[in-house]
Image (cartoon, rainbow, N blue to C red; front, side, top):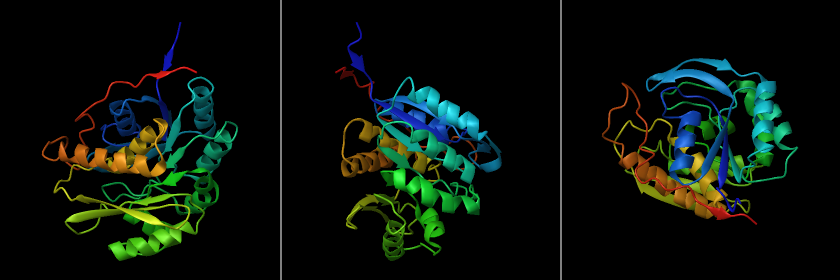
Length: 277
């Protein structure tokens, strides 16, 4: 007789054959944090640690069928959404998810790769704001992505505060504005809640180019901690710590010729067993 279930996290994201970002980073993160990972592929980028060479789309109907297949069988406790590079894909994901009961959704608005390669079409941004922001419980833009969303340069902590307030006006419930690109020794990220209050998260900058997939890792870590029953703020706190440790434990490793990955398995957890009710 079956008595237990694992906390499950579904990642809806793009592919990374080099293993550092996208669905591969998500699955590693979710697994390392003791949750059961399921996945839906949204796009097939051809990339390695040095950059993105090409992007091949997945048909919208295929994405919808993948989501239905997972949610009809292994219903997740949280969802992470990553790379959605067309308006049609955004609408497909939103409309498919609306047919199921609401669960926590973390959206990482992947617009720029670590290498600086632009990954999203301009017309898609408006659809993301109109359709995806309202169903997401938290979005996790970096400074470049925040700048794209509010059409301004985001280079300093003061810029981040201005951008965060502006993004709030776009209809987001919670925003984690990541400060990983700050040119300071201390990295500061800002978590805005739906009352326009914000909390700062600080960590020391680690001098390394092994940060490929750090945004994917953070968003899937937040989803994993939400799946375990934590609040948004607690999940962000735990996820920030996890990513900092993963960067630290992989900063001096060479994997590929470009921006290397994090060490997702510096302290892997066993799959968590929750009693069935």
